[in-house]
Image (cartoon, rainbow, N blue to C red; front, side):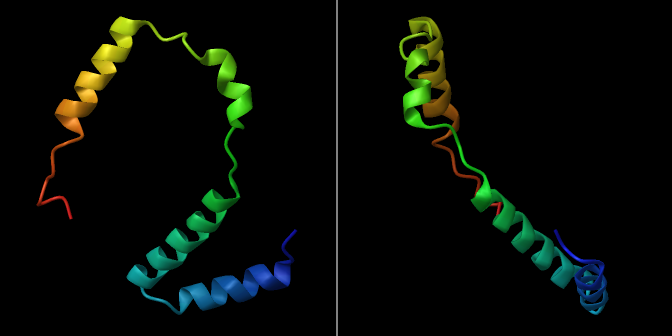
Length: 76
């Protein structure tokens, strides 16, 4: 658990940054949290194997081929 002293020090330093720098700090903190998040083990997902209808799989495949192959050059 974080102490009040650390919280105060972090907030003081965060307030010294401009908005863009604060966004960088927020993104960094978020990335630390995401790295700690663990997904399900593959073994626990095996019970779902073969449960998706073949028509649904075909629709997913078409959607991926149609929509995921596009590059929007203005997106970045």
